[in-house]
Length: 82
Image (cartoon, rainbow, N blue to C red; front, side, top):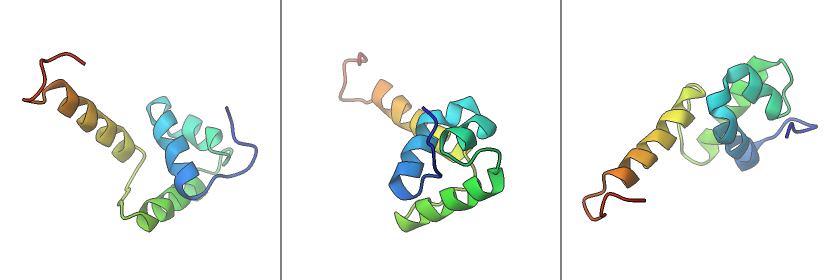
């Protein structure tokens, strides 16, 4: 669902991570920034900085998610099933 107004802070981070696989343009729109990719990227970096996460691009959110999934799949303490 597209936000009617630009999101900020943790709400922006949540929205961006949920939509990151859809691409930059779609994620920018879903998070309420319309076609203003620069404003979206700037606000995303600010939001990450506030919680101690350095975000260079939207791909950083995708890679973190993949790392978590990979860790769950190959955890030595698991039976190999999720």
